[in-house]
Image (cartoon, rainbow, N blue to C red; front, side, top):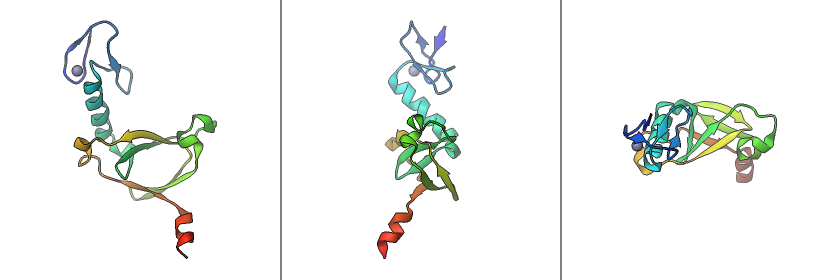
Length: 118
Ligand SMILES: [Zn+2]
């Protein structure tokens, strides 16, 4: 028997959503959203929040077709470090109720921006 990892409700048949690890289940889209964003809050060092948008910088990926943002090379200042990634995966806009828990912790460094100032 499956139960919802958020509200504990019993899940019947195939009417469920998977959690991030595919071992937990949620009964509804609403519970899944709570599970999903709570997971990110608990693992927030793995996620870059840029102007209220959530990204997950991933490992280097050989095939840029499957990389985040099509493998575009992005330089981030993230958690006080400079990080270069070619696999920046977009997760989604941080919902209003999670914004205090997930403040901006990164920004995209664009060398072109400085050049254009001159
Ligand atoms: Zn539920």
